[in-house]
Length: 156
Image (cartoon, rainbow, N blue to C red):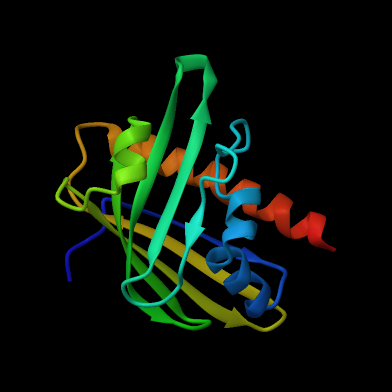
């Protein structure tokens, strides 16, 4: 199997069902799937966790005057175990709304594993990235994982 461009993993002190819900429910993703310092564009998230279903999110980046828009389709859904989807990127709201699947995309795999009273999660992105961008993307995803931790803590 090809190595990912980068991976981020973390263990959370929550049952796997809570993590699965956080990764698959559109309202939950709207609440946390963004870097800690940036909000999502309101009502931009879609999640239809079945093979062929849509996945989409737009992150507002006001200091640079654009939205970072991501979308794709689920290609593998194994409840409480793994999610896989394509990931297209655009800064164009029109392209985001159109969800053009002919654009270049990456593959994202989210693995989950029950570990006692905790759940381990790994996010891996596969595909070519420009020089230095894998490190930036990994740092960004670490921030997303921080947002996930805050979201799970707020749910208590």
